[in-house]
Image (tube, rainbow, N blue to C red; front, side, top):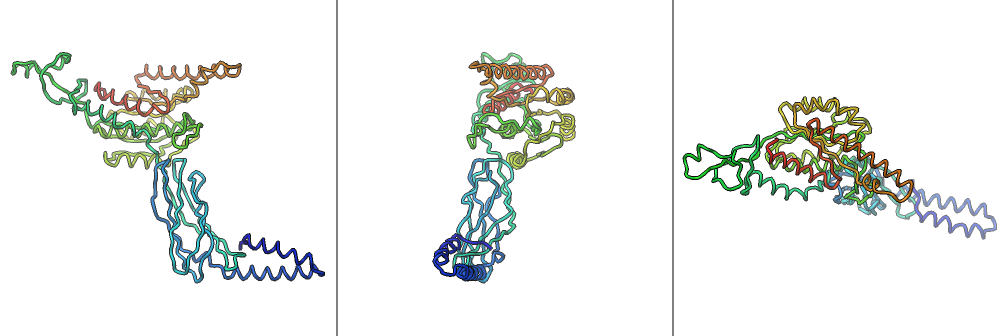
Length: 440
C-alpha cells in the first residue's frame, strides 16, 4: 500500500476541527477512522499490479554515445482501469529518461512506454525490475509492486577512429596497385610488367622480357594478401588506467587504456580486412576473456565489437605465459601478432619479457601502447617545489618507458607508443608500412 500527497493534505486539514472541538480525543479518533476507511476503499478499488502484462522490444544493442530507446509494452489484463505511474529502472550509467511515466489505461488496452537511454559506459546494461504504482479513484492511496522483466542492452565500442579509415584505405589502394604507385619488396606478389622509367629499382628489371622487346621492362609488385593478423588485447590491471579525455562524455578523467586499445584494434582490423588479410582477436589477462577466430571479412567488425563490448579491466596481473600459450594454440603459421598493452616496466619485467623471445621466434610481434599525456605536462612543471618533485617523477616514468621500448626493439619487437588520440592512426600507419616493405 502507498499513500499519496492528497492523503497527507487531507490529514493536515482535519487538524483544524480537532483543534476547535470541545472533545479533541473523540474528534481525532472519529476523523482518523473516516480517513482510514477512505484509504482502505481507495486501495481496494485500485487496479491490481499483478494484472499488468509487460514485455520488452526494441534494439538490443547500441554504440556508446548514441541514444537508444528501450521500449516497454504494457497491457492491462485486469478488471479495473489502471491509473498511476510506471518506472522502468536502468543502471545510472544508462542515463535513462524519464525516470517514471504517468499511466492511464482501460481494461484490455495496451500501450508502449519509451525510455531514452544515453549510455556513458561500454558494456551490458541490465534492467531487472519494472515498478508500477496504481492509485485508487479517490487519489488518496493505492498499490505498488514490481515485475521482473529482464532486459539487456549491449553498449558497443563507438569506433571513433573510423574517421581515419578513408585516408588509410586510399594509401592501401596505392600499395595494391589501384593507382600507378607500385612497390617492390621482399615477400610481395608479382603484379605485372611495364616499361622502365627513371627512378625504378634496377633489381626489378625483367631481363627475359627486356630481351624480347626493344625497351627495358620492369616487374611491378603488390603486397601479399591473405596474411594472418592476430590482435591480442591485454585486459589486466594496467589496462584500467584512465588517460586522455573521454571523447564521449568529455570527462577529463579520460577513457581507460582498454577502450583506447579497442578503438585502435578496430581500425586496424577494418584496414586489414580490406587488404585481404585474415584477422583474429584474443582478449586475455590470467585467462582468455574473449576471442574471435576465422571470422569472414564481412562479419569481422560486427563480431569484434560484440566480443569487445562486455570486456572490463581485470585488477589482476596479466599472465604472459598463459597468453603466449593461448596464441600458440590458436595460431600455427607465422603471423603478425599485435599486442595492445601498456609499456609498464615493472609489469613487463615480471612477465612478458621472459616469454617474448618464444613468441617473437615464431611470429612478427608488434606492441602498441597508449601514453598518458598528463605525464608530459607534469614533466614540464617548475612552478613550486611540489611541481618540481612531480616533474622528477614524471621524467623518471618517461625514461623507464623509453628504456623498456628500447629493450623490446633490440629483441626484434616493433613498438608503437602514442598518445590516446593518435594510437589508432599511428598503428594503422605502421601496418601499412609493413605491407609496403613486404615484411608481412
